[in-house]
Length: 400
Image (tube, rainbow, N blue to C red):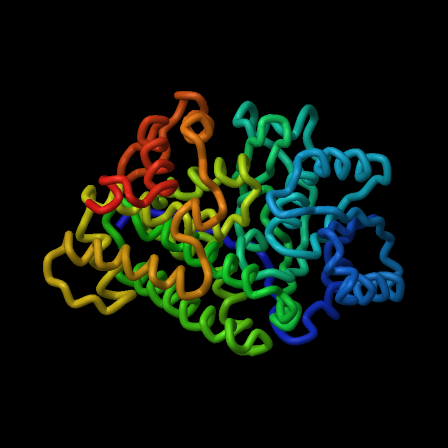
């Protein structure tokens, strides 16, 4: 195992009616003015925003609002939020929504608290030194942004989807009421479940020695989400399943499942960022579409790790590690398909041209300035090959 530091400072308030406590949580922050940041309307239609506004009015909390966040949150709205916060002297941001809203709130927080263009932090030109404090009322279990140090924003100029990771943006508190996720469409629920599992799988597939306990937590989390994602297809208002998935969302991305490892591979997320940036697909669906191709491309670098995944997640009995690894990859893809997730780009309705594949590969490598992944170092040529595999499963490498 590797030495590690574990830092998870977010206060979690979990359970039925948890959003009723948001007034007290805000008061604990000793802030003067709050920006309520939300998405494209569901928080209003559900009555959640009305309830929060009523609490704020009763508690005498001063606030302004900015909606309009969409999946793959846009830099243009971040700029709008920064200008609004500066004009109104906002000193706390409450994100009401899922990962996209929380990521947008974090970017606004960076932009208000630091000089210069906030995009510099996502383009890796500078590192932020401060962030406005953030709180979250979670309405979608998926990204884990409510307890992570991550924020991902899409720059419409060039379709660039980039992340900024620092502990400065970690939420002060996260309010989690599983009931708030009842009305999610099944596709959105399954995209969320895929994202949750991938946050742990990215950490699980690594090139270091691993802790038995960390592996056990990771495997239990993945199996729990798989179980309850299927229940939610038939019973979307099952509180127990919604609660299991919502808590898994936070635990999958607060670094718990990476303790004692080298941090994991993360190539799939980087590959998907370019798919999302170019084609604006749901993040979880994009991850499912590319994962099998990535796995087949890299598994021979550490077949015993993929074999352990196959045996412990899917109870595959094959004793040969390489054969078990391939069987595990196939089983994972079968699971994705069973819950309506794609396992190729064409299943997403994408038929990428060779020019588009090369553009995504170039962007993924920062035009030759970086590689991604630890199981295999993936630069532009390797990324292009994985995109081709995901684009057309019939090519020979896919079945190796």
